[in-house]
Length: 403
Image (cartoon, rainbow, N blue to C red; front, top):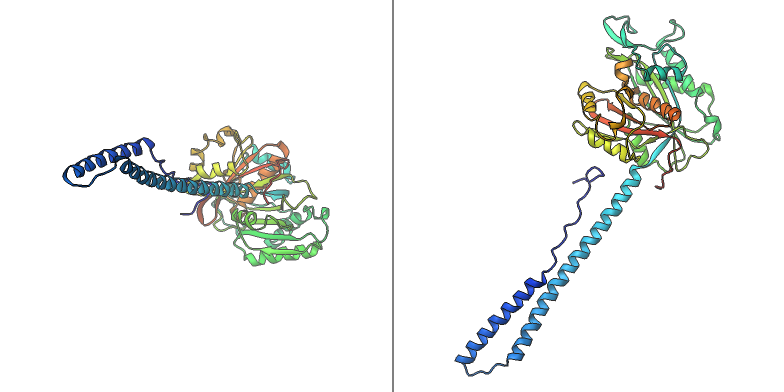
């Protein structure tokens, strides 16, 4: 069986200690039986028996057996102690790994709102203003409810819009605060009817145009599984992680939105040049019907003692998954989140597809930074019936000690 902090290995069963009273009764029975047999043998044979010698032999025999049983018990008890100490060390090690977190150094998101300032867009989302409405998609089709990015000019092609979106993300990166030798790992999470490689090529072009000198490595991966893998494998890396997420011209288009997100992340153990705006704690994945355990695990990874004192952000959820979230809303640690601080982004602007978890994280990070309160994010994963739960805390949260 595979064990985890949600499914701890059991303590070693403890052996039952020898019961001295029971062993004394056995000794008394042995003495009584022996005396009876000696009396019978003395009566019907010519041999003469020494009662003292017989009792001494019997005592030695009993003591040998008792001490042997006691030695076995002590060995079993020592073995159980060693196992439990190893179990406790494993739990401590796994807890330290679980409580790793990434610094959120910068967050940029562009949505279909009319407002251009990011703070204004966030306020629109928090206030619950819905922009999802019936309108034409990019192909001119009607009969769908959606929200679309608002380009500065209707004459722009989709590729040109993407170029502008990527340019904004790159322009807002605080890389000038780092030396030119600062390495960067870039990962993409894209959903679009356009070929993904075409979209990546637009990014490569923008990066060249901006003349960023930093060494760059590109990494595959999507969803919050990428964050979990980074925390497992790259916690000592000095590289920064840039997550670029985009949904544009999605298929199918109904009940969707277009969005672009850029998240710049750093390791707390190695990045000390820039003060983090927020912290992204280790996310936890839970299968259908197991969300309560996932939420509790995400809170344990921080840890959250009393409850979430900020907002609950939801994104990329099916109706079934949303229902499961509501069923856990009054349980710890979500019990402290009032109804008006539950923000279901899908119902406000539409499902952002590949960008959905990153948009939720970016909104939660900006809110945590501004309000200095912890935020919880619960989002679905494309292609799998899995819910990810994670907590965003202000950047001043205490430093981890794990190496």
